[in-house]
Image 1: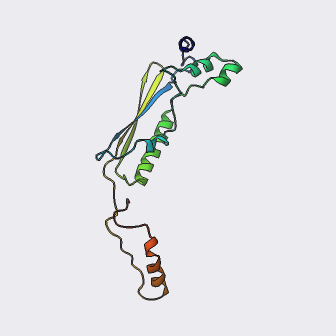
Image 2: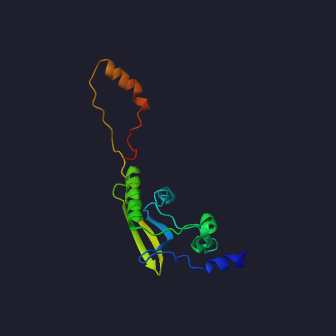
Image 3: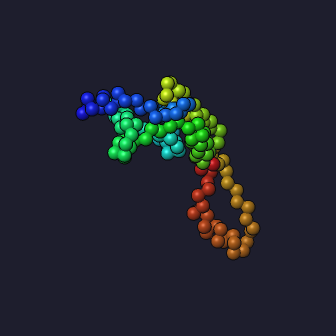
Length: 165
């Protein structure tokens, strides 16, 4: 099995790329979190491009795909070609998600580096402070049926001091 993998890896995983194209080799997310409670897995779903699967650091399925032919392209895996626009879309989606979580001042940067025909993307997230609701004031008309119904429903209201904004 190992010899088969080494044989497959001997074939370039980038040979079918055009000039100026790079195979996405790695994606990394680094989070700067002051309190250390943020789980970076919560933003993984917003990464549009994922690198090809690998086995012991090798990409045998990409190599098989590059061999060509109907059989090999069917069982192989097409190389993921790095896209700057996908990196930017991912960055913006992460930024929106962080704002939804209350990190309005969060900064997300997507940086790509290339080596040969391979690209690596690193998302650097700086969270900052989460914003919380300080106080809640309801201005409702006094007296009448509306006030009674509102006050009866008040325990069901989820907007409370301390809630993430």
